[in-house]
Length: 242
Image (cartoon, rainbow, N blue to C red):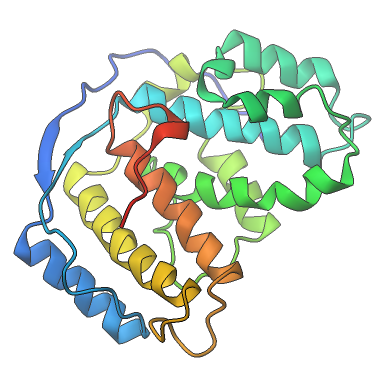
């Protein structure tokens, strides 16, 4: 597991959250254009002004690293990565604060649980927008699930090692401009609306798009984007209405 090792970095102040209003006509026009060009047809009546507040970077980092710990627990055999390595990482970085009750229960489950292993891929989709905030590729809108190779790239290059502290890693990271995050969240808000309409039988997504499988990918990526712009809201209470 040497590819998870990274050098510790010095500590600086974490950027403070800022408040912004999104959904201007220009942002929405851009979102609708991208949707239509890709074969998605969101409702024209969606509100264009929604209040948002960027979450502190340390909380975004905490959620990303919590997902990392959960994925490693389920996907990497204990003979390659001992339990204590992961639990120490969780405890030292207080990552339980960024997990739901159901996610905490994963840490009490067998690391060979096939059912959990088959479902953990949805955490990949949550991780992509969070890693994008720290410099990873932009989340795609095709609905195709992330690959293991992509997740490994995030773990190697866009998170700290299991031997490090997030508080040391974070100050050295370049974070995304809030404007870009607002624009991307609005796009996925519109995509999510088209997906939900398709799940109810509407012809609102591309012909080769599975409203359930591919739609789930859009849902999970939108989840993280909206959560990042919902300071003060717990992960499980994120407003995903469309």
